[in-house]
Image (cartoon, rainbow, N blue to C red):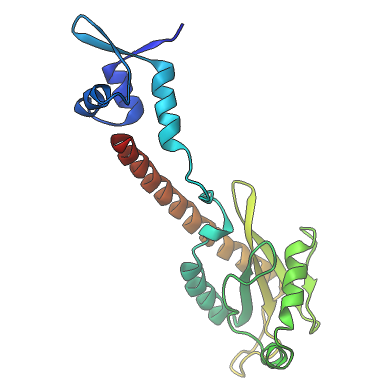
Length: 218
């Protein structure tokens, strides 16, 4: 036997007002039983309605994917990160495809990519598939990539690749140590993860609003 809910309980579940509940009863979207002056609604009917409204659309991506990665934000922060540290950096997806453009690339790699049409891609693919925390990854030119995963709730969305620029500007008197690069990478990743979490919460909120609107249109 089903549990029965009051109008107020249904309002709280569906996040709609009382008038919407009565309109849904009138047009048949929601079934209820009137006992005296009070309406009661079968819990299983309400849950079924919620499932219909919350089911993802065909082809809809989960919120937490590299496809939802805020590339425009990442590029700005990555460029600043590289310029301040005089290091090369790049964010790749789980297949090794670049999500951002390389910041502060070295002259050697720029020349190699122009001649060979993308010589760095092999190193990026290797970096994406290699076991972690095995590091660093050595690229085709013999430079070391330090890899740091960008993760949300234990799920890796992308990789940050950082390497010491082999040709720092003349104004640079010293280069960062590997330990320093790892520390900077971790801080960069923490910033990106915070941005992704906030963006995911916003998207979640917008989806909830959309589902509520759907309920009124069902």
